Length: 434
Ligand SMILES: NC(=O)c1ccc[n+]([C@@H]2O[C@H](COP(=O)([O-])OP(=O)(O)OC[C@H]3O[C@@H](n4cnc5c(N)ncnc54)[C@H](O)[C@@H]3O)[C@@H](O)[C@H]2O)c1
Ligand SMILES: [Fe+2]
Image 1 (cartoon, rainbow, N blue to C red):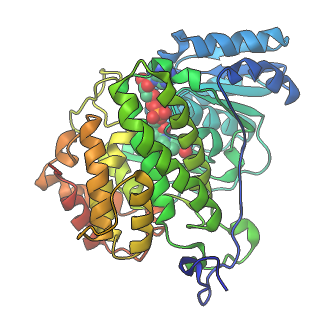
Image 2: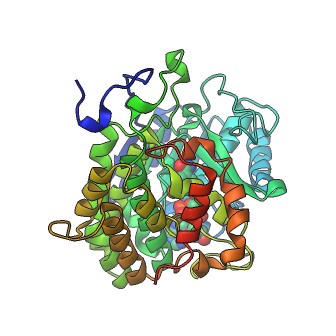
């Protein structure tokens, strides 16, 4: 018996999935409750993490006031690097270690929340920097015990870092994006206040929305949890447990909300009505991919970001070349959908339908229907035209493939086994879409 045919039991496969969800609150004005929440978590001396741009915005002022109103001593760390690196993580860890804080509050995008998770982890359980980092680059060590409480307050809506056990950074020595991925670093509480999105530039909004969309589709089309080998012990069951009936629910609704609101939100940046459902979509997809795991577009994105040449994106800091995360993901997605469409056609059709695409009586493969629908949104929101839009050409395909191939955790979560030549074909198909 299976809940749907996709989750049919298989020989040696897992028969159990786990529903993990960080405690989250959602609502306009919710940020004003940060102080009371921090007090309830026992904080008396908190580090408030942010980046130099967000430091000047209203959400940081609101949170700082709210913490101080509860008598909590606050030290602000506003030196987070956007798209963090091993060096910027280490600087934040040093701040956290010296400060002897009993709690952390992060206010910012994925860059800030991820940096805060790493700072809390290494200050609470010191070890070699690579000890907790994902294999094969690091040792993949499990966190020995609880961290200090961390309240994560996103001011973007793409990463869902407030509810995941993931912290991503650019390991500069190897030109590779990698991270720490373990339930032990999940924040204690996420506070999603849609009013934070008021100042978000339209390009960041679009990139966040397409990142959310890809999280949701990748979780929906991930290999079923029943196809992943059963773990020897329950604690060894990975966070990326594969598609499951619970993550499906969150992801389908997230796709629907993105289809309904993203283009309008980018076209009409002054209209806040679209931003509240977008933030909710981000939260839902975050819970979804936190329980299922992403697959190929994210697996390929680390190479696209890591091998950047001289691309700079409008709306982001311009001092260093950088392919922002949402761009690095979405440039791959249509090509991947065309490839994986045949592996689970009904799931690609479900996603296309949720996005609002016409699926009845259309003479196209399901993967193509979904790819074409997302390409239309990419064009309408000013996203780059595939890999060529972020500075790559045909000659870069072998290097991108070599760089992405070690991302085993994500590649193995594809709906069916993928070879290196398949990966190369998907990168080639992502060069240009229009
Ligand atoms: N932990 C996870 O689960 C996870 C998942 C996906 C991505 N990531 C990582 O998160 C990072 C990207 O995070 P992001 O997309 O949230 O963006 P970000 O934190 O990198 O911020 C992007 C830009 O927007 C600015 N910004 C943020 N909020 C703003 C606001 N409200 N108004 C105006 N400007 C604002 C920032 O200062 C920055 O310049 C990457 O490092 C990525 O690898 C983490
Ligand atoms: Fe993402």
